Length: 330
Image 1 (cartoon, helix red, strand yellow):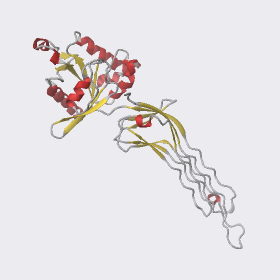
Image 2 (cartoon, helix red, strand yellow; image 1 turned 135 degrees about the vertical axis):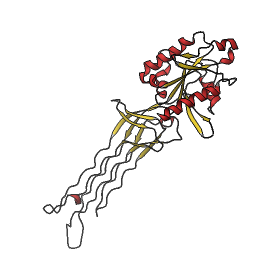
Image 3 (cartoon, rainbow, N blue to C red; image 1 turned 90 degrees about the vertical axis):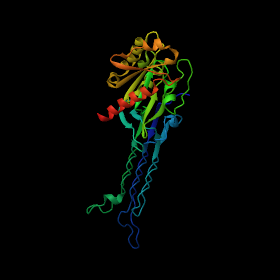
Image 4 (cartoon, one colour; image 1 turned 90 degrees about the horizontal axis):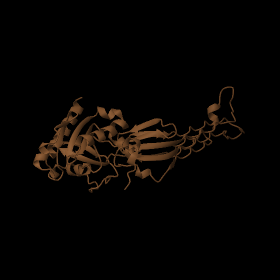
C-alpha cells in the first residue's frame, strides 16, 4: 500500500450573483422607486482539519473542487442566495502551498481548523443601492465578481513527538510494534515499511507520547532517492529523534554517520533536535559482544535493546520520556 502524503488539487470558488434592476409597481405609479436586490456571494472552498483522517488518500481521486455560484438579486429588494461552499477534509499536519509559486498558504495542525482556499466572488449590488437624491431611478445594477481559482499542492507532515529513523531493516517497525499498539508490516528485508507508521506509547498512569516509524533511509534519501525526501519531511515536526542502529553491524559508527549525513543534508535544523541512539537486535549477540557495544556516540548515550526479549525496552522508553519532559520544561 502506497502512503499518500502529497496531493495536487484545483479549487474554484463560486461567482457572485448579479444585482437586479427593478422598480416598484404601484397603482397609478407607472414607474416607482428602485427595488432591485443584491446578488448573493459565491460559495467558498474551505479546507477543514478532520482528526479522524491520517492520510491524504481521501482526496486522491478527486482533483477539482468547485463551489456554487451566488444567485441573482430580485425585485422587492430580495437578495440572491449565497452559493454553496465546499469543504475538503484533510488530516492534521497538512501544509498547503500554491503549486506554481510554491508559496506557503497554510499549516493546518489543529482539529477543526479552517482555511479558505478560494474565496467566493462578491455579489453585485442591485439598483436600489444606487438611488440618491439627485438620481432617484437608477436603471443599472452591479455585476457579480468572479471567484478565485487556484492550483494547490498539499503535503502531509505527521504530528508525532518521537521519530524513529535508521537504515533499512534496522528494526524500527519491530520496535514501534513492541512499544505501542501499531501493527506495521514486518519482514527481514529492506524497505518493508513503505509508509510512515504512527503509534501511541503509554507510560505511567496517564501519560503517553506519539511515535512515528519512518521508512529506512538509504544514501541519497535527502535528494529523493527511494522517496527519501518525502519520508524525511515527517520528522520535521517531531521533538526527539531516536536513531536506530543495528547492534550486529560490524561498523556501528559508520552506520550512525550515514543516517546523520542524510538528516543533515535534508535539513540542517534537524541537527538541533534532541537525539537518542538505540542499538537494536541485541538478542543476536552474546553477552561478551553486548559488553563491547559503544556506550556513547558523538556524546550521545547509546541504549542497547531487543524487541524480541524486551531487554532494554524499559530503559529506552524512560530515556525518551526524560527527554520529552525536558522539552516541555523548556
